[in-house]
Length: 189
Image (cartoon, rainbow, N blue to C red; front, side, top):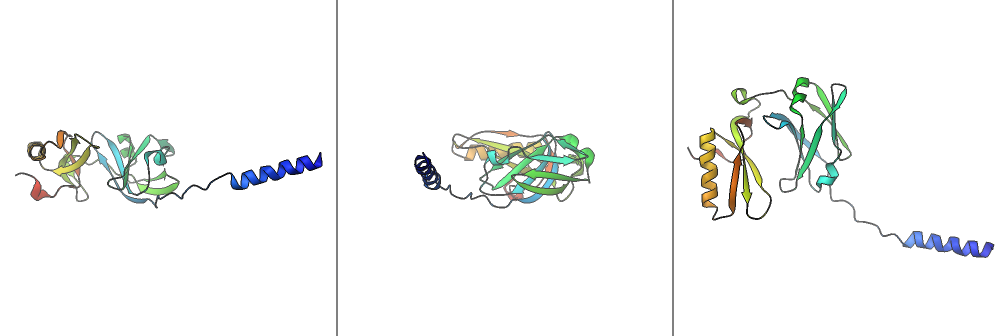
């Protein structure tokens, strides 16, 4: 009986020692906080630089400010190597206070931005709108373009017309404040 038990234990040890394969280490890197601002129609947007992450890695992120946890959702933009997190716009009531973000096992202390509408862009932001281009193949891309709605509409239509069918549509947000993704010289006057 002891011998059978000993052989069985040896077999279990061998299976557990050699039966599991090591998985490769994750290619994810440290996350770097870039900044935050209020975006009309979206809420408070927090941007992080990071590569090697997937959407499942950033699920469950949260933000703590004003003695409460607040609704907070994050997505990964692998092409731009960014993680973008959005909190409810009501978070601006805590403008200037420190918030704590838990994201993919890392903690960030951030200053909650206040509301700054199109009439009062701050921090070097300019008035413009977000243009989302839809392609026949691949994921849509969104860019912030400076100018009036008419100038941005003209720019988006010109891009679509000159794309030789690659761009199949576009959508333009309301006017907002932001950082230009497309150089000003490429926007029609």
